[in-house]
Amino acid sequence: MGGDLGPRMVVEGTIRALARDRSLEVLLVGDEKILKREVQAAGLSDSRLKIVHASEMVLMSDGLRQVRGKRDSSIARAVELVRDGEADGVVGVGNTLAVVAITQFRLRLLEGIRRAGIAVPMPTGREHPCVLIDVGANVNAKPEHLAGYGLMASVYCEKILGRGNPRVGLLNVGEEEDKGSETAKETFDRFRHLPVRFAGNVEPHDIFRGAVDVAVCDGFAGNLVLKTAEAVAEMIFLMFRRELRRGVIRSLGGLLSKAAFREMRSRIDYAEYGGALLLGVNGVCVIGHGRSDGRAVDNAIRVAANAAAAGINERIVGSLAAES
Image (cartoon, rainbow, N blue to C red):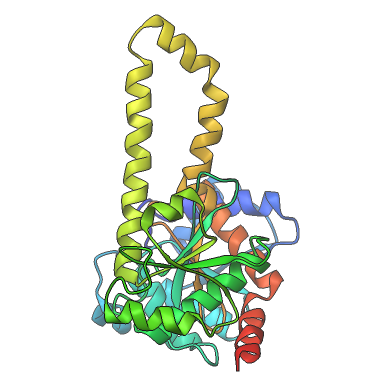
């Protein structure tokens, strides 16, 4: 209910998801009257879709106090469905703070995990993405939190994205071991003792070069990297479009290269990745972009379904057990 584009885009994404995956069942959680109206307007009639009523809605402007006070919000009810075993995963495309807070409170953390982290597959110059964690769940991460992020993202990268023996880097201001804050130095030392392929410190440009498969940082730095990357990608395409309109020959070249540009855009478009997994909670949770359209919602549902089917949390717990 709380996304920038409203429930209509969520219904559109649900239609796409149900058409794509015949084994899927979707519970739409929110104001029953509004959701029924949107479903009927879309001409959707599918027994695999059910509506669960929630009397309240978390706004994008709501802070933690307001979020906690709305006990029957759509995101609270959706998370409870996962907690109670009525759903295998939850997708939220509204207020990120609300999704993180409610999910951690109602689902709790996995045994051995100190903080949950949001993991986003970032596009790179190679064929595979780099998983950036955390991008906003915890802005004041301690070394033990960052070490947990690296372990969880390594499992995610290997078991969900198919990257064997993924390289894990610690985001820092330089590659040298003694660079950065005391937190960064202590985290570096912790990584040496984890069952991951630690590549040492990496800088932001290493993410986009594909030098590592996982880049670990606190939520403050990660959120800045993510939003800067989104803005730069948008700027590049605006510049391309403007330059290609300057003259007949350039326009012709643009037409000939249209397929390549379309493929390039799909690789850096957040809608193609769908959403970010909140790793570390005792359940599958995917956080979508606030501006998610139907395509992004469809892909977010796909991410949640794949994570549930792969047993991502069981694999994370198994890795923690191996560490100890």
